[in-house]
Image (cartoon, rainbow, N blue to C red; front, top):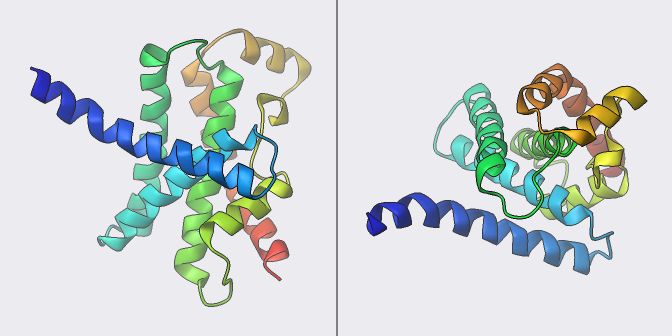
Length: 183
């Protein structure tokens, strides 16, 4: 039983632990607001998942779908296992947004690496500085009534539906910012 738990728990703990450390180091190295550590962690993890899947021959659409689904599963698991305060709906929305930014960066790198010589970390920092990566739940655009409701509860279905409606817009904004900051 212990062996099974180690196999089930240890790889995700190492995976997310690595991105936690990397995101904090990136924040420090680039003098970013500490709130960006979570944004960078989500974006970099999603970009890595997408990139690894593409590297092993998974199609672009399937890699994107898989990275999105893993982000959703991560948020679902956090509802039950996260210690301390649980993420509210609006925080889940922010995390989904940042996951999509990471996936978009990976797609950008996969298709245009010759024209943008920045590292993925440099691209993510540029997106943090332009406001494409979301630092806090206050960066999510909702009506005042929706924002209040989204801050009060943890409705994963609402967060997922919001994300699915906004995926294309997040990708478009990310691509536009990558073009503008990559000059």
